[in-house]
Length: 339
Image 1 (tube, one colour):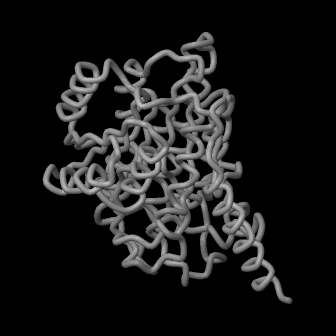
Image 2 (cartoon, helix red, strand yellow):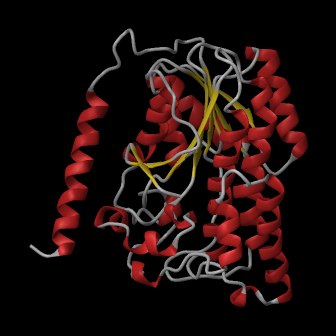
């Protein structure tokens, strides 16, 4: 059996393990949540976000499904409600400060706050072997700045509880710092190297992460990491896109704008976890991110090898972990991976 076959075998074994784990119900002493627990899922009118909302609601959590477009969001909620699930809708555009503020006001007035935030909303404009940066501004603004602004806006509304509030951001292995780890960490990582938008027939060995050593070192050092540093990295890239010098900037060579946007979310996850770690018991907020894999959704033309149900699993698992003491980590398939 060659390496490719062994990797495929390990991947399938892990998928079967997770599929089995998903059938095991939480015991009463594990269930820290109830129907009074409020979970917000952004960009949840379809795909991974819709399935995360579905699974959380199926576990008895009250879910607020958000979508930029009202009509499609309301239709998605109707489908879940017809299945007997407790799901509400509110319009939300994570690029619009006024929309974020209106949403926060509504959450506070309607529920008094929230307990779980799933940052799923995001965009990508490259498919297959494409690596255009034509829409780089939109990608960075939505995937990083929009996600960051949601986290900052909703942290003050996260309700105190013995179990702690939870923030989970959907990100990607494409946003990892170390290109060697991205390419050759292990067979399993190579098998799930892609996120929902990355066409797997690109040889993974062609991927290169950030080759700018100074930037890599800055973003790797969590003790010195700052919001300003992450913002500056993204803004430097966007400036180079505008003046046409980005190709020599030492940025990733595959899905450059998307990869960088997810790298920024990964870094901001670590930073936020560090900032929040000193909160007292009863007021804890645990912040993590995860890679769902290459998913069969409209965003991939249904070409992925991971179902939305499988892709949503790790987000739901992280959101509902009993005795949650994990924060500032990166996961895939219910396992911690490195940044």
